[in-house]
Amino acid sequence: MTTYKKIKIKLSCVLAVTVTSFLMSACSDTPPTVETSEIVSKAATQEKQNHRLTATDLPHYLHRDIQDEVFYFVMPDRFYNGDTSNDNGSKTQAISAGGFDKADKGMYHGGDIQGLQAKIPYLKELGVSAIWLTPILRNQAVQGDSAGYHGYWVLDFTEIDPHLGSNEDLKLLIDSAHQANIKVFFDIITNHTADIIRYTDCHGEDGLQWLVENGCPYKSLSQIAAGDSYKTVIPKGLENIKSPAWLNNIDYYHNQGDSSFKGENSLYGDFAGLDDVNTNNAEVVEHMINTFSDLITEFKPDGFRIDTVKHVNIEFWSAFAPALVSHAKSIGIPQFFMFGEVYSFDSKELSQFTTEGKMQSILDFGFQSTVSQALIEQKGTDVIEQWLSHDSDYLDDDSNANQLLNFTGNHDMGRFAYMLKQSSFNYNETQQIKRNLLASAMMYFMRGVPIIYYGDEQGFVGDGGDKDSRQDMMPSLVSSYNDDNLLATTATTADDNFDKNHLFYQTFANFADSYYQYPALRTGQQQSLYHQNTAGIYAFSRTITSTEQHQNKHQNIVAFNTATTEQTVSFQVTEQAYSIVAQSIVENKVANKNEDNKNKIAIKGKTLTLTLAPLSYLILNAE
Picture 1 (spheres, rainbow, N blue to C red):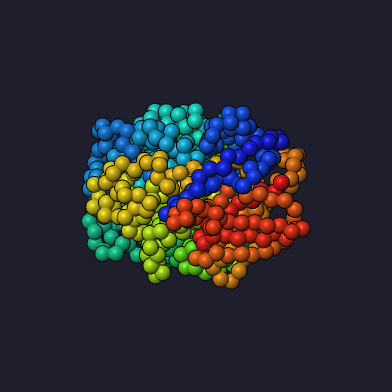
Picture 2 (picture 1 turned 60 degrees about the vertical axis):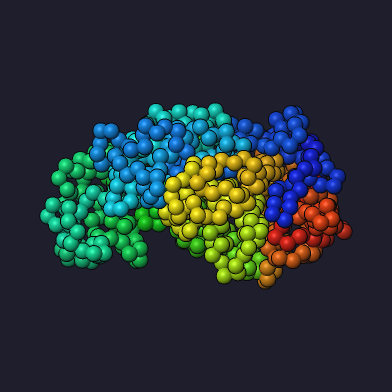
């Protein structure tokens, strides 16, 4: 638990931006004296100009709360190649070998655990405090015309995929991250394993044929009860291919054919042919708890992101999630944290997994949808208020909306930059840059925990979701990646894209700096102050009231202008003195000054009037 103290620091006024630049400015006309947490004490004593807070300045990773994190979501295969000797995977197990083709967007590209370890300084300077890896356990290397570069076709839940390195390499990565005070989160799967089990109706008696064109039709529970079920078959030589050994028991799977993701088959059907684990079986629940407890014991990760949560019966989660958290605590990981992927934009469906399902948190698809409506579709900022009005759905004895994970795009739906580019509003590049960065500011400063999708900090765009949003950070040979016009840079994905001077990289680092400086931006209760039914201003306060943990009241006000014109609004606040501590500024290059377009505030009594430039934001601190 962080103990908060009164520490006075003087903020340096730095960083203005041009019309094509949108850097965070931690400044005001009169640098204020502020009270903040001991997180900044190291920076305060160093008194280095332009020093930005990073994971080094945070509480120790073992004791740090989830609400203090900035996540970086990365697909290791597409990040950086630290060891070319493992590019082709296993040298002893044919099923986990091959699939390496840097020119094919559906194959392995060579990124690995060693590459991630080499780039920890890059991530730390970006302001990242937690790394979330796509699944890294040993996969079936090739299925059909694609490879398991993404990690979601797991065969072995005890061994790292040899394309990515070894178990020892992973331990070294985690040790290196922990030495930098950065957490590491694994992406895990309990819903399914690699596609090994076949059905004679669809794949012949040997399981090697394809007798149907569009998968194996789902057989319902009523059909199964009536005796109409599939006859299973495992191709010769694969009978004991999975590990731990219990995963080779056919009775531990539903074996009902392919899911159409509707109704009951969303729970019981095979996810795109992948073997659907029978998590209704009490023995399976026990085996899953033991398997992942062993993983925690061996590698000491700081938490799990859990895949395809809504395709598993909720009773499973209510047993699985608390058991793993308890196990982690028993071996010295007191803040072990799990969040699930529930692909839904409805708070009722999302929240049932944090309440009834006993999971600590989920990815907030509702946030992603709301930001898209406000900044891509140009809807009124009241859509933000409508979304936040359902936050009470998440409240129970061990979870709340502040713990939700915010993101703007991902490896399945695609990048926010792509969604902007495809908009019917035909945004030009300058508008795309501003809207992307405003969306990211919302991700950092609204309630919830921010997640950077790898490559977003380098202006990646992509051509859609899935394979089209999984570009290489290292120089790419994929033609459909390399023809992209990346934002705010002349580089392409054919180049090495670890540019610390990139506008987005610098902006995200400054976002993190403010996020870490002001505890209310991480843990404060959010309250709406202003919204409207057209594009324009959305303003809110984030307040920490006096408690044993926080000995002083601390409040920030954050305002975003989603309109393309300057906006001036007034609303009531609780304090009588505020100063601007972070904002976006548009520089008037013709006049060689920026004062004309600078955001402004005025306060009379407890009425705050603020003026925001188009597509900008500001953060106020209550004095």
